[in-house]
Amino acid sequence: MDKPFSPSSARNRDPILAVLRPIFADRRRVLEIGSGTGQHAAYFAAALPHLIWQSSDVVENHPGIAAWLADAGLLNTPPPLKLDVNQSRWPSADTFDAVFSANTLHIMGWDEVQTLFRRLPEVLAPDAVVAIYGPFNYAGRFTSDSNAAFDARLKSDDPKRGIRDFEAVDALADEAGLQLEHDHEMPANNRCLVWRSRVRIIAPRA
Image 1 (cartoon, helix red, strand yellow):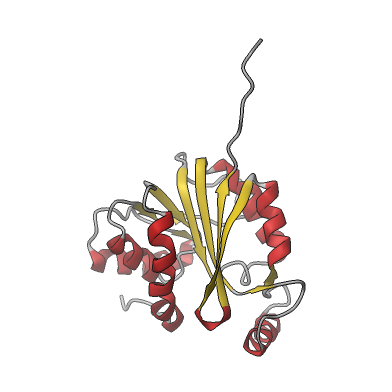
Image 2: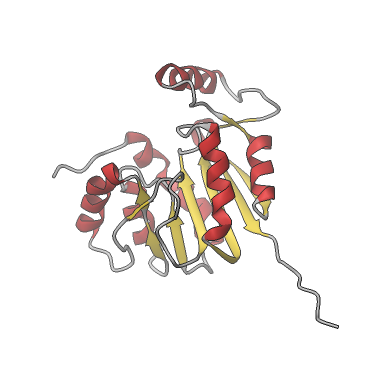
């Protein structure tokens, strides 16, 4: 099949890689949520060969992801997992010490964003890192006119879509046991937010 192609994925991959390289340097297994075309999975897995890069998405996107992975011919990219954040069980019995997602939160409805963060602890290993890329609002305001126009287009396609408020997303992450480490400014009015699992201190038994 012809591989699907996203121009924005091609444009943003190197700035994202510059953020991921140091924070994933000591990671082993990454779950990418919403792999889309599969371009990021193939590119990042090639650039970070020490990682097992586990792609995932709804099943209709699997052929495109599989095509990109097949062409890349890498040993660290297992077949994509079928993953809808609303499904009753997430498919992997394994845990991951890193999670990555790009341009997904503004496509999901807010209830799905809430579900995503509520379910994250099920798949996170201790001291896991979570990196999410995309546009965000701050203090309820758009960071640029282009983001405001993008939000209007999203809502015209589906009223449930839209650019999310950073503060609301960070609150969900906090409830999931994640602490913000970095908020990276990215090209084209995007951000890359990086959280880490808070260390749980277990008191010794008396």
